[in-house]
Length: 312
Image: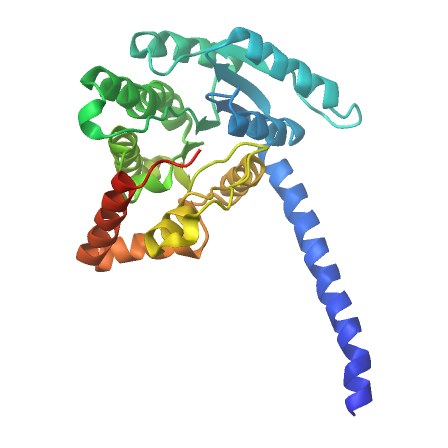
């Protein structure tokens, strides 16, 4: 009996691996078919995540409208997508639109230009984001306003401009790529955290408002989206508990992983996705149920940070 069990174990593992592979392949093909011929608008398409979203949705056969504030970088992305397109599969030539979401005055006009590309929008991916780090008293009010324009007022202005088309057609999906700081605040990122809280609040409310029109609102909140080639260094982060905590909190996820999750969110019409390892997830729950403890840990970390020279 024991020998038979030992012999069966490799076969069982092989069978499970095969089933998992088949499931992943079916999911991948299903994801692509879900966006075939759909008009997909991606803001800040020239960012790391924007490029990966463009790649994933272009491969899936979507009709892309790529928005960004630098025309040369948009053209580079356009050329890259065209060069890797598979001739045996149906893909569409992306449309390029100049858009700076921090310039609220131009968003309405750009929204009309976006609608003119294909006459409608099926999926809007709000990806644009601006970051700033520093003590609150050293960040000017002008910079605070600029962060709010880029991360909050810009996305909601574009959303409001495109939403009537979705409502009239009774179909559509709006995806907000947000951040863990829409759930909890981290020191020295006051303006950024405030803008992410505001954006998450807006789209949570909007979700309920447009449900009757069959318009889906989704939020995808990773910890931090790290660059392609930068991995967290060891340094001296393990010197204390709070440093270990914030190191785990700020590890982030790769743009490829976030782009694949955005595709899954669109396919499954998920309402909310939180991409994080157990440490950040635990932090959100601790912030909710044990706020005094959470604030004490964060405050202790700030005090220690102010007394220790910055690394690097």
